[in-house]
Length: 204
Image 1 (cartoon, rainbow, N blue to C red):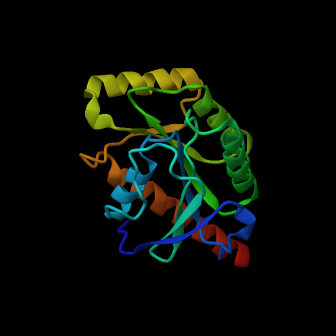
Image 2 (cartoon, one colour):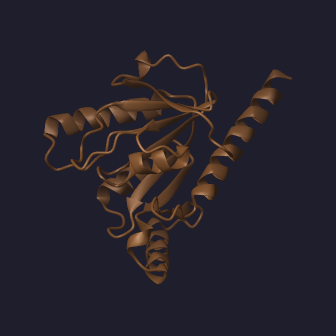
């Protein structure tokens, strides 16, 4: 799939205020500073579509980006940022959970993990939440250019064992080398095609 057009659409705190046209949504979730904005920018081949900050915790809303006028990328606030107040962390958690529970258009939730750090309890909590609500999730290991290929394989194996679920797809990724960028775009394209086919069948 080629992304020829990408634009910031809107930021909302309450998903119910988002006026969606029933376009597919692809969600990017993960800890602060894990590389969500960088991944989005890499996929759309722009440097500054999603704003990148050296200070974690900058994303405080649900940020929607309209892609090819056909679907959305949704950047969620990063979780686990220690310097944010407990009250604000609770608000973010409520906002994210309300969005995930209320949107009917989510096709894939990409959960980003820094490969050098692996999974922790917050990541597992999100994964379990998504599994409970039967979302399709794909784990993306970010910053894979910073470790060796053998270490990447070790981390993938370790997470499969942690999750006790070899059906969850795990994709190593690097914004620097563009590792597996094409594979991620292909997964998105396939999900859109499947959604379109399902809609046609429902109309018939």
